[in-house]
Image (tube, rainbow, N blue to C red; front, top):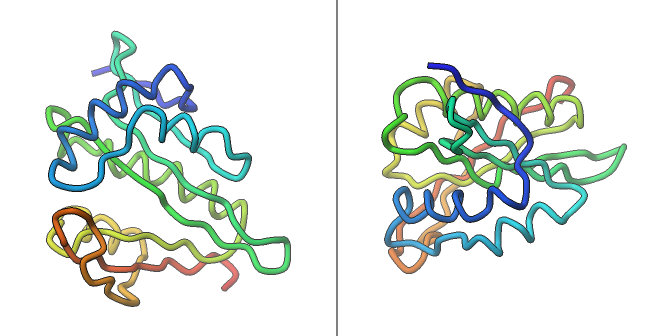
Length: 155
């Protein structure tokens, strides 16, 4: 299968919002407007994976925060179309975000549902460790989230 990773464009927002309904039903879903809003912030970077027909099959975003003396990053979201799961696309998206974070410097943080074993395993493989729990973080489901951190190359 031929796929390509590119920067996310505002025109991708509708498809990403559509995927949200398949991936995160039961919690606050990102709307197309939410994706467009995130793209407008200069410190955010979002990428997508497209199939051979140009359809978005996965997306991910990160915020590059802090300053030169105290940089850090926060993974906002990663999602892969259920029909394309377990093919390494989530790992590819995360790798792209981590390259950006490593260039920026500092640690990388994220939240992930405590019951999302596949995602937790992926994050552990990429050097993340659980540093806390946020009770009832996801709404309206009330699901808990792990806060995870990956130390930067020089931290």
